[in-house]
Amino acid sequence: IKNTVMEKNIITTKKEERECVENVKCGKGKYIYPDRNVFEGEYNKNIKNGEGKIFYKNGNSMKGKFLDGKFNGQMCFFNKRENDSTFM
Image 1 (cartoon, rainbow, N blue to C red):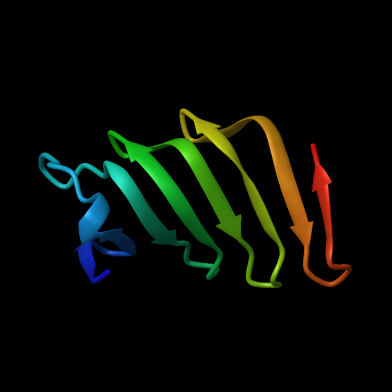
Image 2: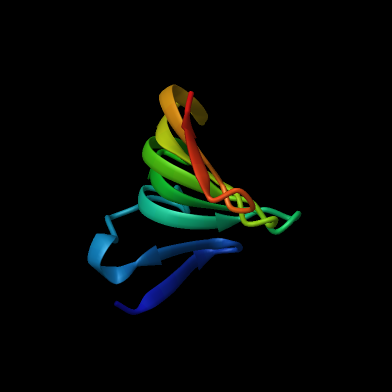
């Protein structure tokens, strides 16, 4: 799958691309924060909504559902150093 850059730091895959209006993030995408942490997941009208995962630069990650840009409900935290998952 080829990647297309929609705007600074936002990447969507052609397979998941949806019609977006005036640079509004929608569908599946990837955002690289200034501190190099990464969000991969679903957007709706520029806001994280749906399934998503945050990858921290130290190798840890969190996976769960987002609503209005925030984790919503149960999350799974993966600690790379201890090779362990914790549900929260």
